[in-house]
Image 1 (cartoon, rainbow, N blue to C red):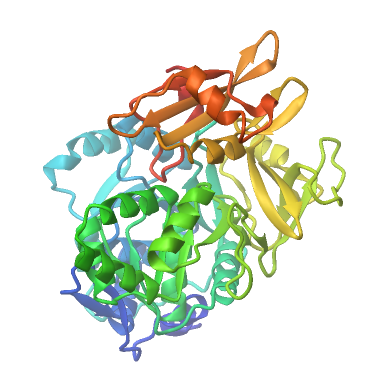
Image 2: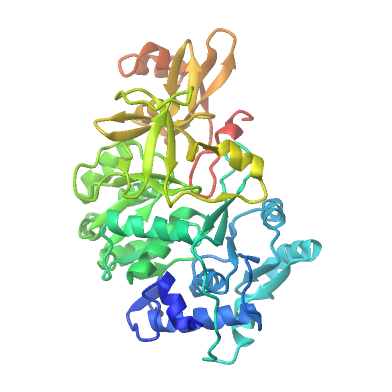
Length: 508
């Protein structure tokens, strides 16, 4: 039988007992763990999970913890033992956690410390669902240190992970990815974004989402890079490391870049220059998980000299499109299909759109595309047509580059006979001097079918009337795109990845 060392190497080639390069470090930099140490810890943890079994046989094992050594150990350990990893949102409410645990049929829930008083509600939930709540340390301590255990050799087609959709338009669905899917998602990005073993990257993104799990953590570990772990977005600590030139790659969502710019504007010249120089020295800055407004793209470039690389992906496919690492990166565009990914635009009748500039639904196929929605064959069947996964996102193709217009269900507004992109209108509104944030939706209207409605968060001390906004828009967009209604709100409802929950706006 294949030994545990060989089997591990087949999945994460850098995990070996002789690799003394640093794999993980704490955000402050005062603690580090080598690939060899991580290899030993993961195998020991996997052995503890198995507890004498040969294979977990796709047991669903959930975990509730932020970025940490325990998180990485659990994710890789569940995989090594033949289980299905179910990472949970540490910011989720109890009803949301109940849905995830129940939907996936979870049997065990791993936490860093099962005796933490803050987990009292979660512990009660686990009792009600007959889910075993276990500390990572207890699993590790159940195995004699350095004990050699034969871990299962896993076929690529086996299920490896369940992530839940954001639930922006309906109840979250469990997205099942196989080991083959995950490998394809990782290796595609390693090539496309030119990952190197000497890369270093901070990880502060939520780890129940494809962005943090695959794009940052798994890509970094697969390549042999150094990943700095932050339990949350600690701006001061992260920027201290940036100014100390500790990172070569930086990945964030647009709202993080907005916060960074706002913070930089409050600093003295010397501090701002040191931080901007730290970003400028990096080889790559990436924005994703939500549309990057052109204004933000330009502001970041002016401040840091970095041309943001914007890409397109989703839970079901990992990353599908990307601006090139070498070559032109276009503001407002998400680039071209990644290596190994087949993507095309389809019209409402299911025909492939060949002409440039014509809107259509993005459909994708390739080894990166997920297997199924867990225990939901109807939703799975509805999402595929002739082997193509229907993303529900509408885009146009211009000179080969895709530009996202939005999700067909929430971002495409049918008004007065026109199909309008809410994202395009939002991008224009964000250039208004008084507007800090905005979201545009279509509201049912007898005259227009759907009336373009803008929800805006104003900058401190600013006021804005509808007549003022309409007058401002007249020279910047076609008349049929101008909002018919303006709603000024204190904040926009967002999920953990910074995406606006547009259905919530209909109840504001």
